[in-house]
Structures are given as C-alpha cells and as structure tokens.
Amino acid sequence: MQTTPRFEFISEKKLIGKHLKMSLADNKTFQLWQSFMPRRKEILNKINSELISLQIYDEPMRFGDFQQEFVKWAAVEVTGFENIPEEVGAFTLESGLYAVFDYKGLNTDPGIFIHIFGSWLPNSDFVLDNRPHFEILGEKYKNNDPNSEEEIWIPIKPN
Image (cartoon, rainbow, N blue to C red):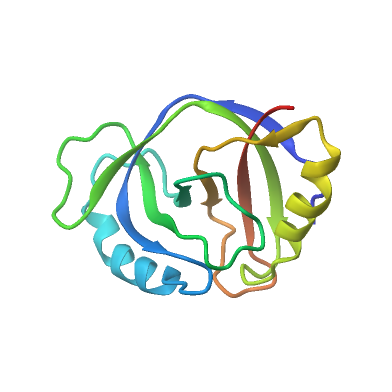
C-alpha cells in the first residue's frame, strides 16, 4: 500500500455516466455499476478506457459516518457532451488539487481509507476540500481481486 501520495492539480474534466444517491449503510455501488457497464460502449467520445468512480458530498465528507448520503457516479472521461446516450448523464468535475494514492488490494478493504483520513491527512499540511472524491479504475483494476490496482484521488487544500 502506498502511504505517501503524489499531488496533482487537475484541469476540469468532462464525464458521462450514471449516478445514484446512497450512503455506506445503504450502498448501491453494485447496482450502479451493473446498470452502467452495458451502456458504456454507447459512449463514443471516451478519452481512454479508464473507468471513474466518483463521490459527491453535499457537505464535507465525514469519515466513518456510514449514514452520510452522497451521490456516486460510474463514469468515463469524454472529450465533450455531444451524443450522450439515453439513461446516462453528464457531469463536469471542476479543477483542483488532489492527493493521489496508488492502491493495490481488495476494493472492499477499508485500510487505505483508514490510513488516509485517520493518519495521513491529520498529519499533513492539508485539509479535505469539499469537492468530489474519485477513483480511477484502469487496466490493472480487477473487481474483488487482491492484486487489483487503482488510484484514489482525495480533494485537498492547504491548511
């Protein structure tokens, strides 16, 4: 597990995908991805083959609050919003600074998030910014596989 992040300032990104409101206690991630994956081949202007799992909180994310609701997107990055297939939507991810953690392991193991929010963030020069959190699921991502790899992007700003 990578315990020290790299820092990246991203430009605005255009995403097309599906979204659902949920909480960790009422987790609908499986249903979301199950409904999105058959539709992704209809999205013609993808930038790459990476999938993006994105969470939007109405107020800053409260780590450990399993009742806090958020909107989760299953999406891909696109060049523009033309030709959006039916039953999917568009979302613009604003630019900003992120701490990026390269993670290898089961996507159900909360250890990396316990490290990020319980150890790394409180001891860093940053605080959580109220912007979307997301994970990039690239070629090395394998659902429910201990050898799976993904990038975890945490929105931050200087303390």
